[in-house]
Length: 286
Image 1 (tube, helix red, strand yellow):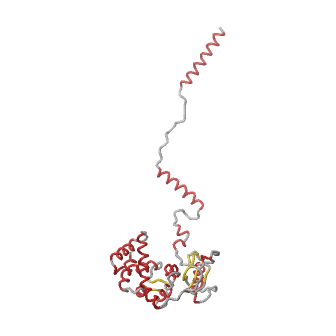
Image 2: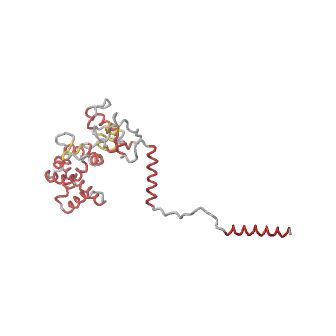
Image 3: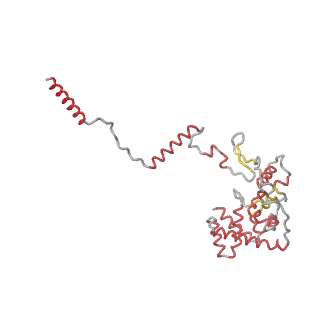
């Protein structure tokens, strides 16, 4: 009898276990994740970055960077840098110091026939003199500029015959440079149109090239005149090979005010002054 009850209890336990095994277990409800669009992920990451940056920033992230740094929109000429004054206004000031140059190839020769350690030193000195600083070497240095790269050396004297022929050679050189840039697709659409016109119209060949170079050299903003300093890109590279370039450019400044107007440029290159004036106006208005 005892054995019977033991067997009955054993069978009952097994039956309960079987029922429990068949009964579905309660699991946490599982939901299939939704597919997130890539642009949503990108926006989320962008928002996270904005929040993280704004936590450490003194101004909201949506504030224009130009408000945070007013110098970003200020253009200072050679020899000057932008600094904020006492009230936070951007001002162009002379470069405090130029890097020490040990490479002799960095040396340049100025219009005073003096060798300088670098172009930075020349631009700095000009700025110091123009702003009346005590470190200015003299009033003549208000218009100091670079004549050519390298140390100063003895240059041959440009003869009268060479000076007479130089305007023609200069016109040819300007057109050849313009054509080469067109072939390399390095001209703007306006200048490219002028180059194509010059190729098909011999009467426009020299004047178009002269207009292109003058307008390209004109400063920012364009004031329809080119300073002696703005002529640097064509004077310095040519000086070693074309020693007549310096006296030629000096002769273009007829009134000796250190600026060459468009009419003076045309006259110097022996071109029609009225024709070159009209074309340049159309370019600058574009």
